[in-house]
Structure formats: structure tokens, C-alpha cells
Length: 88
Image (cartoon, rainbow, N blue to C red):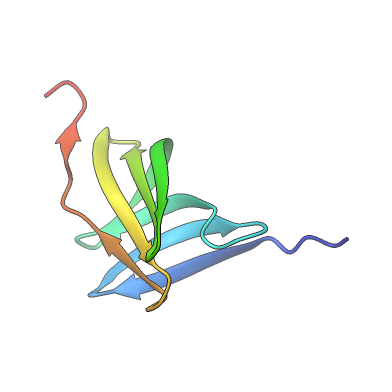
């Protein structure tokens, strides 16, 4: 079986998330855009599923921690305010 792998971008209020998609979307967020700056995701700290979609707690290369949620019914990403920077 040929597996299609695509990188998706979803926009919400000027914010953007890049995510890897293998079998399902979203499978693994790779980067997010926050206040016009592209932030690479260095680590997935956790993930969960709700009836409304899929959530991720991620850490960016600059040590910021964000919660991302993909609302499946609207096919939109919601990016929460940064939670913390490592070491603070």
C-alpha cells in the first residue's frame, strides 16, 4: 500500500501550524508561527484526543512551551499562549 505523507498548514487568525501527516491528520506538529515568527518544534511533550479534535503540548527550539489544538469540525488550529520557557 502506498502511504501518502504530506505536510499541511492550517491558518487561524494569522497563526499557522505545520504538521506531518502519515495515516491521519494531524500526526505530528513540526513548526508553528507565532507573532510572525516561525518556531521549530523540538519536542512533543504530550498529546491527547477529545471528541472535538486532537491536542498537543509542544516545546519549541527556543524552549517555549505551547498547547496546540486541532479542531476537526472546523479544520482549524488553535494555538494557546506560551505556557513557559524552560528554566523560568
